Length: 137
Length: 137
DNA sequence: CTGTATCCTTAGGGATACTG
DNA sequence: CAGTATCCCTAAGGATACAG
Image (tube, rainbow over the protein chains, first blue to last red):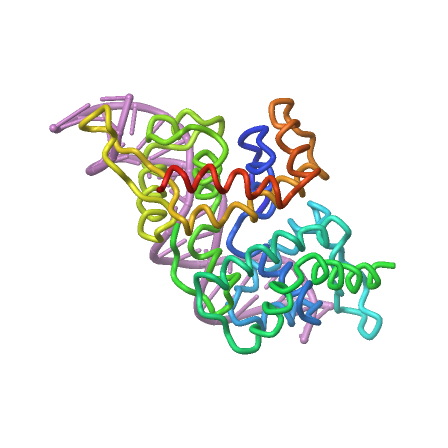
């Protein structure tokens, strides 16, 4: 939620930017699904509230992790996508998935993806990363 | 702070366990410094409040990310250390540092460490990880 | 010094209504 | 449907006092 800086520690600074319970879930949606609109994010399983979503989209944009574009098919709709800075969070998310895989039971629809990430982590990161970069370019 | 489960998504589950603004800072202290007591954590630069620290230590222990032992030199003191589950968070923290290195200015005392992590990430992780495992064994 | 407890303020967040 | 606004409650968290 972009809280105020607590120390010079880079880890702490990162947490101040996106270390809340919702920001990374929006990032996740933008990374691993085709979700890219307000309504898409709302529909995600966690059930984020409308006001929270709006506030997070705003703070993520202020932090330059995502950017908001005009939707090509609608005047009112925004279209959100990751910036390079946001894309660079990918290795962190991947490691989180790998950790989770060790300590939680994985939903079926994720098993294949995780397996790919486990087999060839760097390759997997590169693949997704390229895919996302192409959207920017 | 171990909030209630919002979905089956492993990423979301992880955040429910340690995705607050303080938990990872305690983990950081246990990983990259010699801090291992209540007073040590209190002294960290971010200035955590006593009640928050106590609550986080408790929830991290409940989640089996850390464990509390008797301090060998004191009857009243607790001694905290990472469990294997906690140690396994290391790659996540390392990726966070590497991301930070790209987008924040690094404090001088961290530059050398980060440089080591950048040069040989896997080796770095293995090194720290072994060091922490030896404390458990 | 290690924690616990209490007080109190603010921020997070759910529900829902509302506007374009 | 996209987003804002309001209401209201609960959780987070700072300050400080207190107990062993």
